[in-house]
Length: 115
Length: 113
Image (tube, rainbow over all chains, first blue to last red; front, side):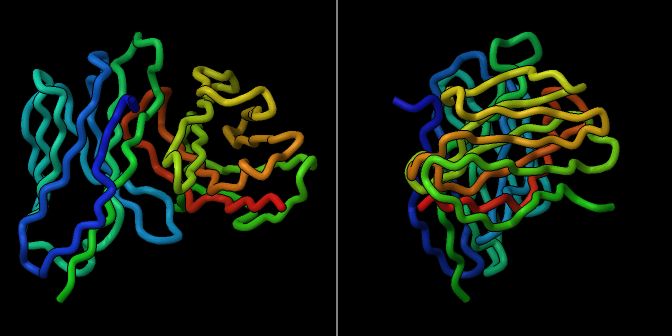
């Protein structure tokens, strides 16, 4: 079983829809939770990060972490065709952890927002 | 400011050869990480360098190695290439070791034939 599980989709939604992307993880040492977006033929770009459990909002994007259930979510409101990309969750250990600095990526969810 | 620069963008090598990939981090960034991306395995951590020292290493065979220079530029080397090494190799830089603000380059697409 992988440390981070993410449904690869693909996910296709109409413009304006609310999108929910999710990951589960097994490593209790994960404390930082990143979401990256990757367009075709490009490297991943950091969208948001959260520390420990809780919510964080940035414009149309909201990240949620529930450490008790080891569940990570990213919500996209009012989705746009330009949001079409692969979304990757990437948790990380805190300083002092045996794998500090290493991002453990989920498989990525392919999202298409059609006009 | 300039982003993370990886060279070359594309590379075709023959099985058994060795290859060196280069990464120039964002100016001022001292940490460089390398990842391998394949359709089957996704993004997998290779190693991270900070201040010319390898700080962490992923579960890859010893054929995969890297180094970092005093100007923070990094290279990774793969010896005795295998067909399964065909992948997109991504470099990411950060201000410090373990920073959460990793910025990725566009990668080097390696094809082993």
